[in-house]
Image (tube, rainbow, N blue to C red; front, side, top):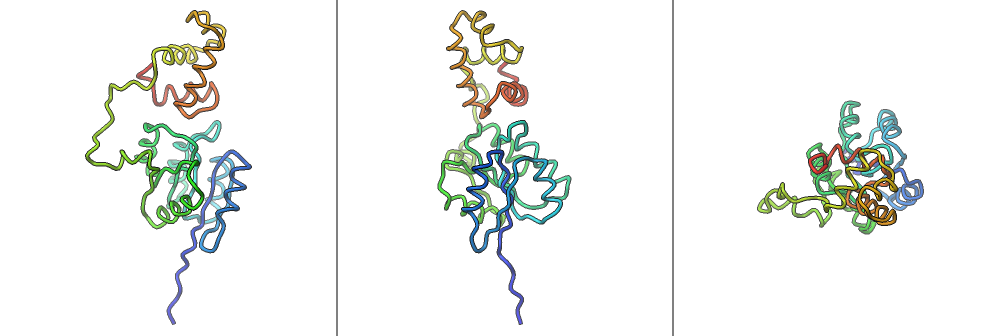
Length: 214
């Protein structure tokens, strides 16, 4: 009698938004897919030590934690499964960094649920998945991004420098001779470009990825 090999994907969804992970983990469950979830890298590492998982669905920005912190810790803990980044937004620089670390793909949350299921099956089977917006990174003829292309405008760069120095919005407005509301608008554009939600995260990302622009 031939033994049947289980094709069930055992997935762990790691996301700091409780409603999102509860809703998505429930919607993903079907024959062939088992999903558990948690809200932090620390919880994820604990769960990986207790149960075998084939695939981790990992948010890029987990508040005080980032996806790049997960993979080295997970490998050190003995995790040999696959990692699929599931996030609302991520810069191309950070996407490249995570792919170099060994993640199996990048999935953006604006895509439909069925596409996420397909991405899970592809990556769990040993393949890779990239959202269409990152297709250039798969094109061998595309070449590298021009190193000289600036990420920020001059005003964004000045505001970023002052944020790194610890200045308040009012102080930045006085230094730049612009309104405080304009400073807030520039800060929001910096948050969107870097994929962060707080000034503290912005400072950390500035040093980690954009120090050359400070």
